Each structure stands twice: as structure tokens, then as C-alpha cells.
Image (cartoon, rainbow, N blue to C red; front, side, top):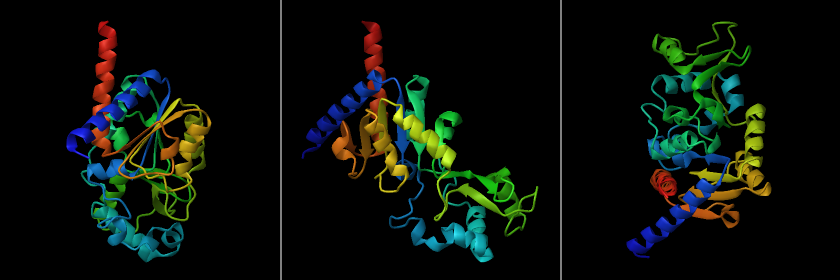
Length: 269
């Protein structure tokens, strides 16, 4: 396919997505690693990703709890900057936040742990983080929460395995490790929003990690329209109204521009 034909097809797809956004009252956006990678955050499975540098076994909840050396390696990883250092929102994050300012966005459901939706301007109470948030640390005993920056300061001052200042309990990054269940309250709210939206836009997820990947099914079964924007195909493509195989930031930037153009044109009539 020639470039002009590809661009024409993309333009038509973007136009369809813009029309769906304008005609919808409750939009839910579901984001995956494909959004984070465009901010320079490596994913886990690809070459050069997290698992090429670290043993996945160190990221199981069982190993974290039972093995002090495993905890020490994880805290050193975070003290050295982790994989979120200097990450900034990209056009996809910014476009999603802009939908909220248009009173179109009901919720953002994300598999990502990087806090970039909030950094882009999305209201924290509209962001449902199924796998937690790396910017926070939680005590496994008393559930006290600490900003990661506070814990990093302690690590930089020589602590190898920090513990809770309130109860001396074990601290853990407030993310879901392998072997942990997703937070039930967050998942329940995410499902509720998915079942009550009229448009769900999947961005940057291949929808292979469950139970998070059930979210589009809940929306579709309740009658919502689906849009999928991802570099590769998903098992939900066949039930989606628009499927775009392209970079999240590029597509969402074009979609937002088209939405604004259409709204402005309607106002000028």
C-alpha cells in the first residue's frame, strides 16, 4: 500500500473515531504498555525490556516477602532511578486528558503504573490503576502509604531495605507483583465504569493480560462501541467499530484535532 493510501485510510479512521467521541456521552479509555513506551518507558517482554535486565522471579510477591536479598535488589533498582526516571506524558496522555476538559471522559482504566495520566492532567479520581502506581510505597502490615521520593531519600542515605516508620512493617512498591491479585475495589469500579459507558477506546494494549483484558468485554456486552488503537491485532478487533494499527500518540493527536475541528464547525453554523 502506498503512503498516500495509508494516510487516506488513517484519515478516514480518525474521522470515524472523532464522530464516535462527539456522539458519545460517557467515554472510558483503557490504556496499556503501548502508551507508556512512547514516553520512553520500556515494556517487560520486548528485547531490551525489563525481563532482559532482571530476573522475573524477583518480581513475584512470594519472593519479595520471603527473600531479603530479592527485596534489596528491588529497592536498589528504585534507588538507581528505576525505569520511570524522567518519563513525561506523550501526546496520547495529553489527548486523553483533553477529553476530560471537554466533559467527554468518564474514566481512564490503565494497566500502567507510571502515573503519567495524572501528570498529563487527568483527574486522579477518574484514573483507575489496575496494577498500582509506582510513585507510592505501601506497608504490608498497617497499610500506611509513602511517596516513593521519600523512600528513595532513605535509600540514598544508606538504607538497603526500608521499613515502615509507623509500625516497622515490610514496605513494598504499591504495584501488583506476580502472584498478587488485582486490587478488588479498583477492579470493581473499573468494571462498573466499563459497563456504563457508551464508547470504550483501547489504546496501546494487546489485551492479553487478564483479568484486566476483560474490560472491553464488559463494555461490549453492555452495548458500548469499541475503538482499538494498537500496533498489533487483538482478540477484540472483530467486535470493534474502528481498529487502527498505529502509534498511540500519533493517532490520538490527530483524533483530538479532528474532534476540535468538528466541534468548532458545528458552533460556527
